[in-house]
Image (tube, rainbow, N blue to C red):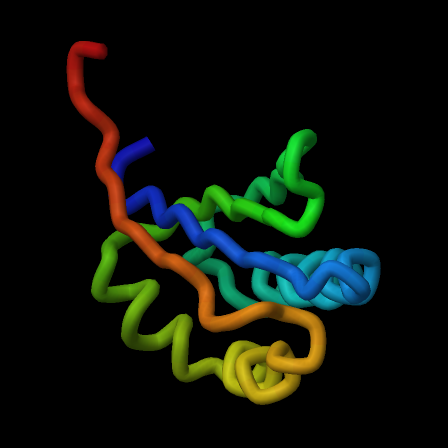
Length: 101
Protein backbone atom coordinates (compact mmCIF):
# COMPACT_ATOMS: atom_id res chain seq x y z
CA UNK A 1 0.00 0.00 0.00
CA UNK A 2 1.25 3.45 -0.87
CA UNK A 3 0.71 6.47 1.30
CA UNK A 4 1.46 6.92 4.98
CA UNK A 5 1.64 4.32 7.70
CA UNK A 6 0.89 6.02 11.00
CA UNK A 7 2.03 4.38 14.23
CA UNK A 8 0.11 5.66 17.26
CA UNK A 9 1.24 4.59 20.73
CA UNK A 10 -1.02 4.92 23.75
CA UNK A 11 -0.28 4.17 27.39
CA UNK A 12 -3.28 3.42 29.61
CA UNK A 13 -3.36 4.18 33.29
CA UNK A 14 -2.72 0.89 35.14
CA UNK A 15 -6.22 0.74 36.62
CA UNK A 16 -7.87 1.81 33.35
CA UNK A 17 -6.56 -0.77 30.85
CA UNK A 18 -9.97 -2.24 29.93
CA UNK A 19 -11.60 1.20 29.77
CA UNK A 20 -8.85 2.47 27.48
CA UNK A 21 -9.07 -0.65 25.31
CA UNK A 22 -12.84 -0.19 24.88
CA UNK A 23 -12.50 3.54 24.11
CA UNK A 24 -9.75 3.01 21.54
CA UNK A 25 -11.64 0.10 19.94
CA UNK A 26 -14.80 2.23 19.68
CA UNK A 27 -12.80 5.05 18.10
CA UNK A 28 -11.29 2.67 15.55
CA UNK A 29 -14.75 1.38 14.60
CA UNK A 30 -16.01 4.94 14.12
CA UNK A 31 -12.99 6.00 12.05
CA UNK A 32 -13.27 2.96 9.79
CA UNK A 33 -17.01 3.60 9.30
CA UNK A 34 -17.01 7.40 8.98
CA UNK A 35 -13.72 8.08 7.20
CA UNK A 36 -13.44 6.42 3.79
CA UNK A 37 -9.85 7.66 3.35
CA UNK A 38 -8.69 5.39 6.18
CA UNK A 39 -7.09 2.30 4.66
CA UNK A 40 -7.36 0.24 7.83
CA UNK A 41 -6.30 0.22 11.47
CA UNK A 42 -4.76 -2.63 13.45
CA UNK A 43 -4.71 -2.39 17.26
CA UNK A 44 -2.00 -4.21 19.21
CA UNK A 45 -1.52 -4.67 22.97
CA UNK A 46 1.91 -5.32 24.48
CA UNK A 47 2.26 -8.77 26.10
CA UNK A 48 4.90 -7.58 28.58
CA UNK A 49 3.30 -4.20 29.36
CA UNK A 50 -0.48 -4.49 28.91
CA UNK A 51 -0.88 -0.75 29.50
CA UNK A 52 0.68 -0.15 26.07
CA UNK A 53 -1.43 -0.09 22.92
CA UNK A 54 -0.17 0.50 19.40
CA UNK A 55 -2.28 1.37 16.39
CA UNK A 56 -1.00 0.78 12.86
CA UNK A 57 -3.02 3.01 10.56
CA UNK A 58 -2.96 3.42 6.78
CA UNK A 59 -3.73 6.81 5.23
CA UNK A 60 -3.26 8.31 1.76
CA UNK A 61 -0.82 10.87 3.21
CA UNK A 62 0.56 12.34 6.42
CA UNK A 63 -1.32 15.54 5.55
CA UNK A 64 -4.63 13.66 5.33
CA UNK A 65 -4.06 12.21 8.82
CA UNK A 66 -2.97 15.50 10.38
CA UNK A 67 -5.58 17.63 8.62
CA UNK A 68 -9.05 16.25 7.86
CA UNK A 69 -8.77 13.16 10.09
CA UNK A 70 -7.62 15.01 13.22
CA UNK A 71 -10.42 17.59 12.78
CA UNK A 72 -13.21 15.00 12.81
CA UNK A 73 -15.69 15.43 15.70
CA UNK A 74 -15.10 11.85 16.88
CA UNK A 75 -11.34 12.47 17.11
CA UNK A 76 -11.82 15.73 18.96
CA UNK A 77 -14.27 14.09 21.37
CA UNK A 78 -11.89 11.18 22.00
CA UNK A 79 -9.00 13.56 22.69
CA UNK A 80 -11.08 15.47 25.26
CA UNK A 81 -12.25 12.29 27.03
CA UNK A 82 -9.04 10.23 26.78
CA UNK A 83 -7.37 11.82 29.80
CA UNK A 84 -9.56 9.74 32.11
CA UNK A 85 -7.97 6.45 31.01
CA UNK A 86 -4.68 7.36 29.32
CA UNK A 87 -1.40 8.36 30.94
CA UNK A 88 -0.77 11.16 28.44
CA UNK A 89 -0.97 12.12 24.78
CA UNK A 90 -0.21 9.49 22.16
CA UNK A 91 3.17 9.08 20.52
CA UNK A 92 2.54 9.47 16.77
CA UNK A 93 5.10 8.66 14.08
CA UNK A 94 4.80 8.57 10.30
CA UNK A 95 6.29 5.89 8.05
CA UNK A 96 6.23 4.97 4.40
CA UNK A 97 6.60 1.63 2.67
CA UNK A 98 9.98 0.92 1.12
CA UNK A 99 9.70 -0.21 -2.46
CA UNK A 100 11.52 -3.40 -3.38
CA UNK A 101 11.54 -4.68 0.20
